[in-house]
Length: 111
Image 1 (cartoon, one colour):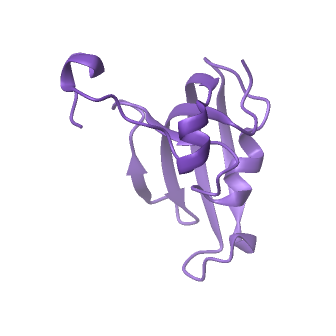
Image 2 (image 1 turned 60 degrees about the vertical axis):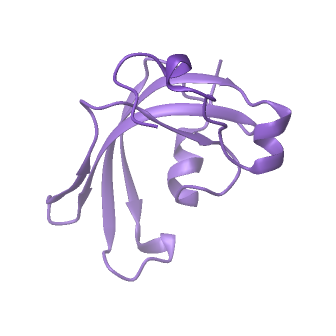
Image 3 (image 1 turned 30 degrees about the vertical axis):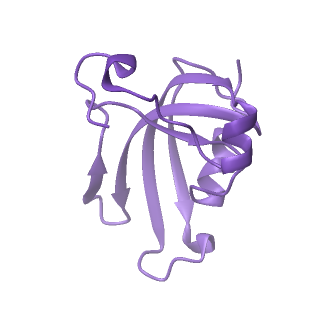
């Protein structure tokens, strides 16, 4: 399945500023999930992920057009771990729904 509106995307990334300083690195951590098309991540980043599939890796740059005043550019190394259709509940809430218990999450859960 490809990244598109109304899909839940699990990804890992490393984000750097224009000086090359690492701002956040979760490439070797548990993936984060977001509902694509809900506006929960930077619009320019969200747009750059459209069409990617699980296993895809990309290096992306996001310019100052994001409306952020702090930096002129951000650089992301992104790994797409999973893409699935969002449930009606997730679409209604505008975000992925977490499992109800730690047993549903699997080993290493931190929810």
